[in-house]
Each structure stands twice: as C-alpha cells, then as structure tokens.
Length: 287
Length: 279
Image (cartoon, rainbow over the protein chains, first blue to last red):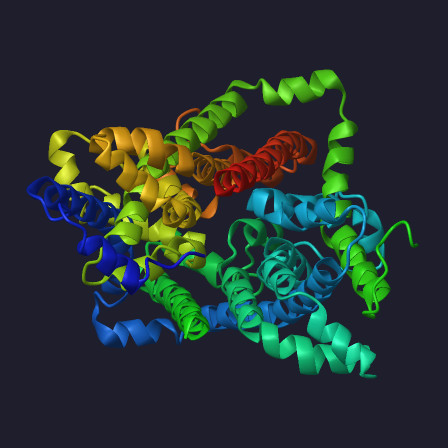
C-alpha cells in the first residue's frame, strides 16, 4: 500500500520556479475539492450516518440495544467464528508464505494465483459451494443427515464459509514481505546449528511480525464482517445462526433502525480500529 | 525432487508446502470443483434455459452494466484522488489517505444500510436530489453508487504507487521544451499510469460483479429491474433450486477466472514496462 509523497519531495516541488502560478493553484484547488466532495458523499456521510442513526434516540436506547439477547448471541457467534477462523488462516498463511518465499519450485506462480482465488470469487458463490457439498440435496447431504451432523445452517458452515472468504489475507501480506527479505539470515542460523522451529521464531518472526500483525487484523476484520457467504450458509435462525452482520440485516428489515445501526456502529468501530492499527504499523515501518 | 525444486539448506519445505496445498484443496479447490460438477449434471439445454431466463439475463445486465459504470467512475475519481494524495499537501491529507481503505475494512452490510440511509428520499443527500426527480436508493443508480464505494480503494491503491514513479525529470524536460499541461498529462503521465489504472479498473469491476452485501440494501431488489446476479443465486437457493443456483454460480466463476487472469497479465505488462523505462 502506498503512502503519500515524502516531505522532501513536496518541498522540492514547491520550490520550483513557476510552480505557484494562478493556473496551478486553481488546478490544485479543483483537484482537492473534487476529491473531498466525492469522498464526503460516498464515504464520510455514510460513516457519520451510522453513528447519528444509532444515537438518534439517545444514549440510553443505544446501549439498550446491546441488552437484547439475540444481539448478544450474534456478537458471541461472531467472536467464536473469528476465534476459530483467524488462527487457522494465520497458520496457513505463515506455512504458505514460508514455502513460497523461501524456496524455488515449479508451479509456484500457479499456487500464488490459486491462493488469491477466494478474493476474486463472489461471496455468494463462497457460500453456495458449501451448500452444494453439505446441504440437504448436496453431495454429502444424505450421509450427514443419517449421521445427524449439521454443517449448513449451523456453526460449521458459517466457519467454513468465513474461512474460505478470509483465506488469502495473511498469506498475501507475508509472501511479498518474506520474498523481499531474502534467505541469508535463515541460512546463517541453520548453518550455525539452529533447528527449523528455532530459526523461524528467533530469526524470521521478528522480521515479519508487523506484516503478520496487519495480515491478522485484516483477516479478523473481514471474518467478523463477512455477510454474503455467511448469509447463504447460515439459514438466518435468529439468536442461533446469525452473526453480527446478519443480525444487522434482520433488525434493519424489522425497521428497528436504532438497533440495526447500533450493531453496525460496533462493526464500524472495528473497521476504524483496523485502519488505526494499519496506520500505526506503516508509521513504525517508516521510522 | 531435485528437478521439482532448487536445493536449499532451509528446512520445512515438504511440511509447509504439503500443509498449504492440502488446506487449499480441502477448503477452496474441492468445494469449487463441486460447483463445476453440479453444473455438469445438467444438460446443455437446461443450462442454457437457466441462463437465458429473462430474469437471469436482466440480472446479469444490471450486474455487468452497473459494475462497468462504477469502475469507470472509479477510474476517473480514483485518479483524481490518487493525484491529490500524491502531489498535493493539504491539512488532513494523511487522514484521508488512511480512510481510503475504509470500504475494504468496513463490513459490506454496514456500508449497504448506511448508503441507503444517506441516499433515501429523506436522507442527507437523497433529499437534495429528490426535488430534481433523481431517485438513487431502490433504483439502478443506487447499485452504481454502492459498487463505486466498494471499488474505490482498489483503484486508488493501484494508481498511487504508479504516480509516485512518474519520472519528474521527464515532466520537467517536456515543460522546458514547451509542452503544455495537457500534453504532459497525455504523453508522459497517462502512459506511465495506464497499466496500474487498468489493473485497478479490472479489480474494481471484478469485485463489483460479485458484490452482494452492500448492494442488496440499496437496490430495492425488484425482479427484472434491480436484481443483481448474486441475489438471483440466493433466490434460487431459497427455492431449493440447487442446480439453477449452481449454473449461475458457474458462469460467474468462469468470469472471475478470466478477470483474475487479465489482472495477472496486466500486472506483468506493467512490470515489463517499468523495467523497460528504467533501462
């Protein structure tokens, strides 16, 4: 992700002769105004609306929304899902990045493309494939029913769909980072007699920890906020299989706008927190 | 083994690659293969019947049309925003730069209900558009608005690094030689940025075609008018028409593959141009 220009670059541009003509300041003003107007309409207004609507009937009503047992159940389900999905995808991401960044082998670029696949696939399809496998009319539907196992319309389906959607994020952050860092230090550690585990935790992990942290929080934000894929596999059983985003939909469709936007405000805060951590990491890396 | 990979003293290749490939197959490839096989159980006639159903055709037209329009809007405004962030300094620039990733981090259902609230006839922006007879929420315009928000970070984030790399000495040389602003833009800046712009455009477009959460709230979901293709999959599933859902899903999957491939090609093209320019 690119940051902005460096201070030195901006100063250098500003000092160029003929740069502060009337026309260039008009163009500059127009570009900034246009950018801000576009973002204000599309991004800032909706963000403010979330909190404005959630608080429209006062703080008491806002906090009362979280006392609803169905809302509490939705928050719990979202936390459980993230608690299973994020560590699993983190282990996968680290393993995939180690294999891809540290070794040269045939078919590597195909593997990288396949890891990216879930990002290109529509979230609805991510849910659909699990319904086709494990649903009542699915490939394993009959067998699962005979053994009294439910995957679709239950927690395992929600976890699988969420895992599919957030599958690439940790690996995507780590692969370029580890490729860029090279193998020299790891090779030195191994030559000096360190084992593989020790090399990873003492040599590699300290170098990649910030990238890893960003991958993990991004994966977490996407896991907690996933809507389309989970919507297809969840069955929308209120209080049982509704995650926070699905609960937002239910409340919204019941015209309980304060409740819907109150839950939405929690998810918005999560997104804001994710971006703050991201900015902190980028700021750390620059200094 | 030696022909498969280059020798290395680092351990863990078999373990990490084996685990990654196993996990990839179990979670992604086999389920996706199930979709392909489900579609294969239906004959050609049934497959074409599902896809040429007027309601399905209308949903594809909306999904592709709205995504194309949204990606184009993002191409224009994304460039303006990226340019503003890279070339100008103004108060709040860093904050704006950080917020560009917001649509990516924000759950789609939240952006969906928030956009609907803003653009509904009694919303902050909707109420100013209503007197002009412009309805955004619950029309196709709403779909375009939602997809534009979703696609924005992809375009801005791919243009930004390219804009940083535009060689300033070339711009200065062109200006010294008497080129006007527009000529500099058309002959120097645009060619450098084009691969990145196209990559961002394709990513935004691909994301838009598959997008569900942010669209269904603002679209109104009227059959033949404001139903998007992913919604039709959900509707077919609710009617237990698994085969019909699989057929639409299969077509969308093929389209995603093609887009992913073109993004990869565009990026290779961009890298090659970059190398050539650096020589």
